[in-house]
Image 1 (cartoon, rainbow, N blue to C red):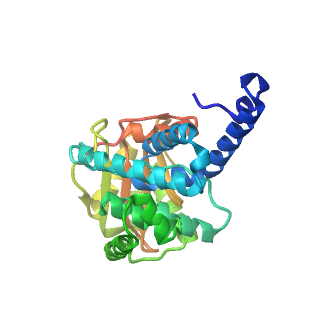
Image 2 (cartoon, rainbow, N blue to C red; image 1 turned 120 degrees about the vertical axis):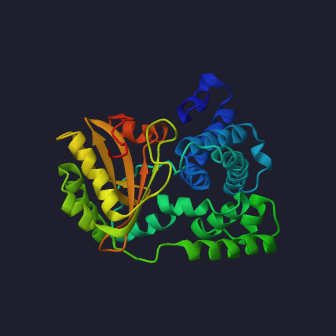
Image 3 (cartoon, helix red, strand yellow; image 1 turned 90 degrees about the vertical axis):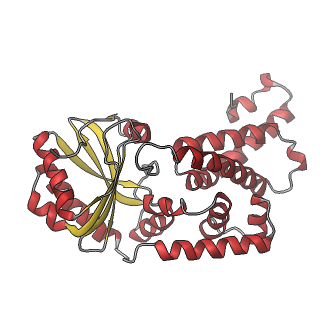
Length: 324
């Protein structure tokens, strides 16, 4: 069990100097916890697995001889990265046998204070970006994230992943090239992105087929993740008209019971769809500023549980099914 700072400084818990040292260790770890969680989440694309990694790092930190650690932050980042690399290797094997399409677990976040902050966060945290990272090997993913997202020096990257600085430079360079070629071609302001989603949400709730189709690109793509727990498409749905028909069918099937709410997921405006009061899906969108080009629909109840709990809602509806 993790002791709180108060417990660590309680005279009844032992020698006061030991309590002070333990309290300092906890405060130091808590100060770095967001950074460690950010690394683990971007590595694994799973809130649950990231939390497990951070807990594992805490246990190692708690049991370490901290007098022998010169740089606490470097030590904690290295341990976090190595644990995440090992877990990602195992996760990649498991995902090969995943039922249907695998999509990252979205993370609910507060809206940043400014549009610039929102755009900056979306660049390195969006669900689409996490999907791109799946193209990289675990070591390349770690090197790229530490260098490009967390601004670590190559000496720190080398220490964290156990490779030479030259090897790390090569990993990062190759990763940049791979991701640059696959990144979206369109730069859309957060305000315009939100405006498009607001119109789409209204049409989705009312079942306005004409508006749904008008807001979707002709070659739009929808990808869904049901995790084998709820119905979902085993292949991408291609075509704006087909996707509009799907959303229209959902509104007709549950008249007056479909609700779509704007929310910030992974630093980007997105939609949460509720059916009969239950969180049915978390939907992230890619647009060109005029129309929606791709929709990533997370329906796996396990990956929606934290969002549902944070909003005080039930999760895991069965309202997303192929239109008859």
